[in-house]
Length: 447
Image 1: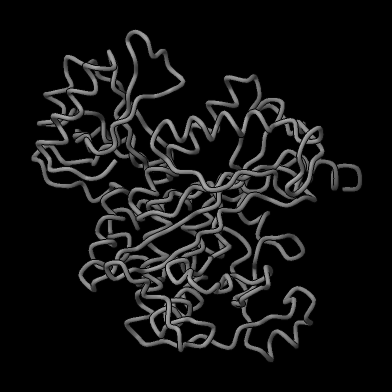
Image 2 (image 1 turned 60 degrees about the vertical axis):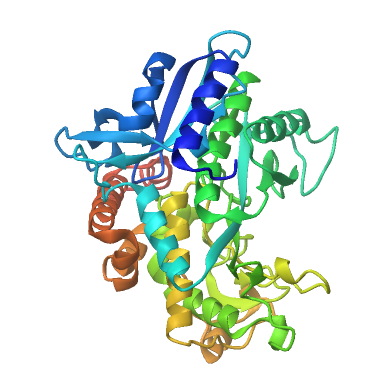
């Protein structure tokens, strides 16, 4: 939905609600961990909510690290109004709007992830840039949420009869499109019962909202069909985990700032510096892009997930891939960061990636030469000779780097930065003291 003037947007929402016989409106916002939160109002309260917002308990936005109950205001963004297709449509329909979180006095709340992304996008806009992203979210279908029984034994791009989930994907794509989210591709992924639906490239704020919607739609369609969908990064040992490769570019007006017809690999100085910034700060932003203990079960050598700090045009073992330029497709020039996973908070993920890239541009960094050989097959000595370092290998290691990162602190702001670190320390502590099935099976018989 194109952005309208505020009053026009409010009028549009009231009109749409009336025409579609909407009775309930779900107000959506996101906590620090990227978990979607929601409460419903009735259509009678809609006009007041659009003017003044609706009060709620703000401690729910802090993740595990809850503070005492605090009053906050959810201010709906009328440009995000959509009817929910999976709820009854003929009578008493249900709609949703994303909200910005405000303090009771009306000023923005620093702990709102959506605000964090808006602030980073403003920094880019002040430099003349619009930040576009196109994430590819992978996920698994299982029989239910209690285990990891596959629906099929299909593989990459497989079609029926192996791919039992074709209809699930089809229904998901149609639902996303009904909610105004453009879809480019959908296909079976490498692992059994693993799938991917790619949304059409758009500006980062719209896309972060779309990622939140996408995750809910995938799960909702699965539930409606008696199965379970998960974005857990590594649910099954020994097969590929689920990633969220993020294609990104900067535009100045209609011009792709990453493209240069005379540049090496058709990349502009801006693009090369952006790549260099991502490579330099990748270890520091990993805790944001891969925020769960389980994320680091995916980031191991030998599967499709990248762990080495390198970039290339063709090689899919690298952290950053630059898709090859095709004549006449200047606007498609982009870089793809392959480390994030689909269980991240997209508002924070896009924020730190942009901050790293812009810092690379600001400091005029140049990336090393691309690595087209398979980095996994190199020896430690060969990697050391090329200066190829690795991403952190656990949440604890990643957190140590993030906690010292000036770049991340600046990108997230003090409130979100401190709350995020506190949340992740709680999570690591809970994991660290937990006795796992592996330990019982491995050690109980011999110790």
